[in-house]
Amino acid sequence: MKLTMKLPILGASLAALGVAAFATFQQAQGGSQVPGVTPVMQTPVHLLFAQPFHLDQAYQYAWLKDGPMVSEGWLIAVSTDAKVAAVTDTHDELLFAGATPIERLNEASESGVVIGIVPSTVDLSSTPIFWAKPEILPEALTAADVQATFEAAVSAGVVAQRSDVVQRAQQTNDGPVYMQTEGLLYRYAADVIERYSPEEADLISGLRAPLVLK
Image (tube, rainbow, N blue to C red; front, side):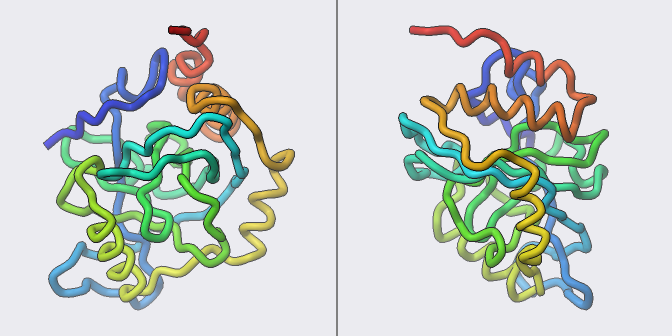
């Protein structure tokens, strides 16, 4: 089943590329499958970049059923297994930050670096970032679904990024970014994609296309 969730990105976006949501549980050494839940896999996730953002105009988060209104959060980049990151025509996995699915912005099949939006200012040094594959599309995920997924991941041994890793990830930017709208945040994200996944030239160009004002 291919995910056809509409992404609010202009130009040559993930929606135009047929890309949507993705992934597979990160597993700590010694982890195993938890009966009755998503299988756990050894898929490393390493935080490379983390920048807080603030928006003047909040938008409703579409990667969760009845998602929250988002006016602040994190723009992140994580390195992972490129094979896991690769997009397929099947039901792909999702990247999570704690009990929240991350909005993925790029394809990452060559670079293995996924750029995404965490829709809250969670403490990244205490919030695990991991891959999971719930048998449900992100726009249908409820708060109870993602909480159960998070609890299963913790039981399987996933842990948060080390504090020194989080500190280094935040040192790679110029501090919080303030934008008026979600669309301008996507345009800004093009710079991050260009930095960590420059092979995605069409996506980068599309995100930088002039905004259409209504």
